[in-house]
Length: 448
Ligand code: SF4
Image (cartoon, rainbow, N blue to C red; front, top):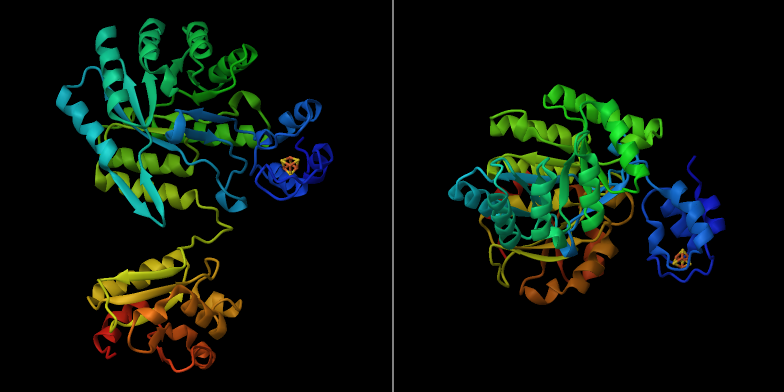
């Protein structure tokens, strides 16, 4: 049974030293109870308390780390069935497959797309995370030379795929320093793969033929001291794989069933030959409850929506997505260009900036910090009111960037115009359109 924040607090040093990243032991205890912190973050906790807390504070789905350095990928650590209950924690890793039977050009194409397909959204860089290198040829040299190529040419995480322990060992000799995922231990090779996992300090994927066999294998491997496991139920139809993922998550969370308390790996690349279908399946496993999703290829039109879906699902629903406050230049504005102002709710920012761009009228867009609230909500909460907006304008330096003295506020915030004029002195406050879609027509009439 999980401990409450107060029970955890009683076991902490209570010195409020702040080294864990929050100011007090109580705050840390609350985060630990909520699954938002890890015990290792407190350097002062005693060994006895550690032993008592470790079990209680461990999330029902273990955390597994693949890779090393800046690009390491954290999987698992999930504590809820549905994102709206709290939040999902560690987004699934998206992997692309290369095999040692593919031609050089095919491999080069997939690796190139892996490296170059990346997108900026809300200050985040979205891209695929891992390359899965599969041995099919039976030729150890071919496999190791492909592993070497992938290791040298990419900076993402690696998955080595073979059930032959000898071939796996050769691959690990090349790239163990990158801490790849070993895929996979099965009923036939579990002891040999467990030995390699221990010897090289790499996480181990386990594949069973169904959940019962999988549970037996993970139980045996856990007893053998292996903690960082990734599980595959062996299902290769989307329906069965989906059912298994739901059963795994429910078993781990609701029944506290430890043999299935690990992040998963799923292979849409083995479920269909059609990349778009593969992408649809992948989006299903982003929502329910994939840990690593292996795709046969990456294309901009399939990867981008998948990455966006992942970003949205793994955004904390209790914290609105916010854009940084400040001045945004759109279309190369000059001192005569209009100044528009709005809140820092990301969606508002994207819509307003998009409409300004569409107008082709260069403009200054001032974003006020409203803690991620939209204009109306921020106004109702007292965060988008005349004096606050006026202060934000003075602070960001927009008053010095233009020669005119006019600011355009959102139509829905018309009520703040009087207070804002008072705060800004001799500035005119113009009430813009209520709907962003009307911004282009409005800006066409702009006169400094
Ligand atoms: S690092 Fe440990 S002792 Fe210091 S405030 Fe955090 S929980 Fe308390």
